[in-house]
View 1 (cartoon, rainbow, N blue to C red):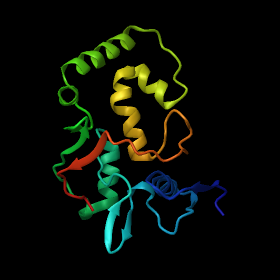
View 2 (view 1 turned 30 degrees about the vertical axis):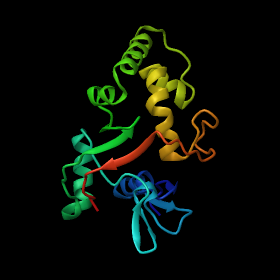
View 3 (view 1 turned 90 degrees about the vertical axis):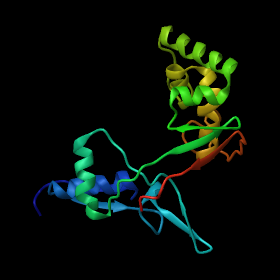
View 4 (view 1 turned 90 degrees about the horizontal axis):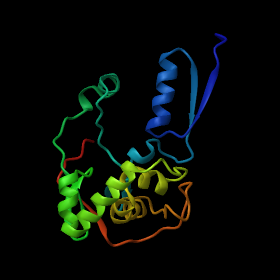
Length: 189
């Protein structure tokens, strides 16, 4: 025994596995515990009737060269560089995702765009307010109109969580119909 502390990591998603790997590389003993029979968290696939479905994002991008180098070291030849273009259906029109200002504003129409821009301008001038939950954090940065049009419904659609009713990430499933996913990207895995 080296006398170094031992660590137990709860969850074998990307964050848990990365933590265990970095601790092990630094000479510590690390054990990763996972409740599910598979590791990977949101970056895994499920097999349903002989078809694979992504649970979460299977793409990786970063501006931090240290993080990029770490991932290249881990993945080696399995890491693929692909051109990606993702879009969401917002109020009946496809807009770029992640949101790009001109695309998003074009997707919601002129009057709603003015309303969103006014909401954004207002929060930039306002004093910091409550930011104790997801809704208030987003509203403080982007304004209430953009939260109502995009961030709130997106959170409900993707995570099945009502961000207002339950701020801890465990909520009732909801089915807003204003958002849908679409994309023309290749899978990296």
